[in-house]
Image (cartoon, rainbow, N blue to C red; front, side, top):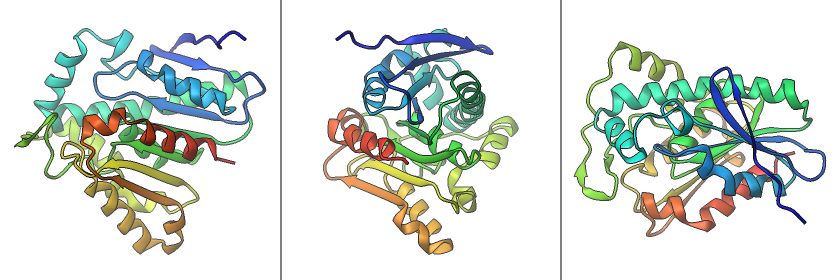
Length: 260
C-alpha cells in the first residue's frame, strides 16, 4: 500500500503542509517545529498522527523553512543571542498564525471531532500558548517545551555551564509576552483542556521547572485540573537528547491521539 503523500499550500503567506488519514478524519492535529526547523522535519510526526486517524497539519513559522533567509543554525543563533527581543515575537506571531491555520482547516476540511496541538521545543511552547487563546484546542503536548517564556536559569544549547544572557525586550516583544505567555495567564487554562509536558531532567536550556510551576499554579486555582495536566520528567535527558528520544515522541503522540 502506498504511503500517504504530503500535500502543501500557501495560506495567506503561510506555507502549510498536511497529511490525511486513509479513512475519514476523526479530528485534526497541528504539530509545530522547533527553533530553526521546518515543516519537512515534522513529516514523521504528521505521518504518525495521520496513522491514528487525525488530519495532521504543520506550517513554517516566520523566518523558518520556505519563509527563511538564513541557514537554520544561523537563525537559531541570532534569535538566542537576543532572546527576549527576538524569541518572544517569534513565539507570539507563530501562536497567532495558528489561529489562521485552524480557521483554514475548519473551512477547507470540515473535519468533525477534536482539535489538538503539539510540538517540540519552540513548537510545544507555541502549542501551549495557543490553547490559552483558542478554546477549539482540547489537548496539547509539548516535548522539551515550557509555558514560561522567561525560562529562568536557561543555559546555552548544548552547554549547561553557560548561562544564556536573554537581553531585554523592546515594546514590540513585551506586547507578545504580556498577551500570550502561558504562565502569566494561568486562568485561561481553567477549562477542559488537557496539557502534557515531556521534559528532560537534565535539560537546562528549557528547564522542566517551568512546566512544574505552571501545573502547580493551575491546580491551586482549579483543583480539578490535576487530572488534566501531566508533567513527565525523564531522568538523564538533556534538551537535545529529549528532543530526539522516541519515548517522549510516543508519549506525546498517544496523548494527542487519545482525544475524543
